[in-house]
Amino acid sequence: MQKKNYEKTLFRLVAILNKLSNGEKYNSQEFADEFCVTIRTIQNDMKRLNVYYPISKDIDGKFIFEYGFTFKKTILTQDELIILNLALSQFDEVEDIHKVKESIFKKVITQPFYSPYYIKQDDFEDIDMDAPIVQMIENSIKAKELVELKTQELSLHVETYKIAAYDGIWYLFARTIEDKKIKIFRLKKIKKITPLGKYHRTDLEKMDKVLEKTHSPFFQDGTSYEVVIKVDAPVAHYFEAKESLESQKIIKKYKDGSLEISFEVSHDEDIDNMIKSWLPHIEILKPLRYREKVTNELKEYIKRVETK
Image 1: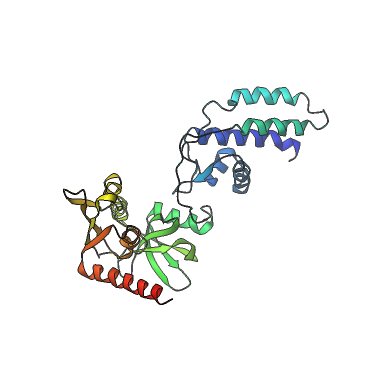
Image 2: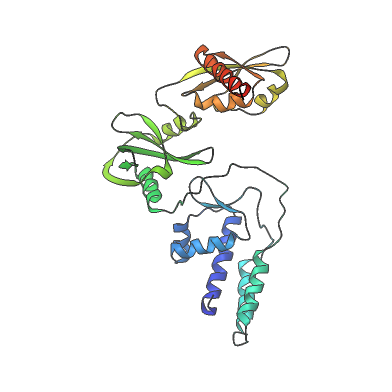
């Protein structure tokens, strides 16, 4: 890095770290506006800081420290950094002084950290939240503007509501104008977004409530049904401690510790993986159609294994 640019970079990086440590959230554009630099400069800054710090993005594409990480008082304050920089600037004519500054900088921003918390999170699909097409989707959501959405297979006019993640994969939650159905589109498969200059009046808070009831990208608007299961006593406490799905309701507790639980789903895939992951400790009580479907799948699996 050229010496004349080093001080500005140093202050910017430390300022970014302090803002994240204080719980402030910025995306690349907002950081660029804050420090009067280009988005590319901020992207380079974040790549450099990611070498030392657990920096990620939240669901809105804003930079955050991973849960449990904070500086608190482990780095220099802005005033301390200014004094240090002024002192070092007196030696600008000294040979290789920029190397000394680089060494000090690394020590300032690489404080050892140990968090008492460990949270295992799903790996999220790599999506460039600053890509033009994602920015256009964000803008259409904020402005309530209708857009033409194109994938390799289709072209639709939609109301965009939310960018959401299911099992680490990013999707667009939207309603199609053609059939007025809410659908979920894989973000990476969207090839083009074109603003239409028309606007909708849909209550986005109501759409958030609809989104809360979705359990998978297989969500089907206007279709819902109840699935009831019986959970054996040895694993019942897992369901009591945590709702496996948003719509989970414990409807009966048996004397032996087992539970009867209901779920409201819109597609078999909403609950399929959860049911199968707890076999043989779960019995599907209804609907009968779904009970028979899972039973036949298990019979087919056993038949395939036994014939090998």
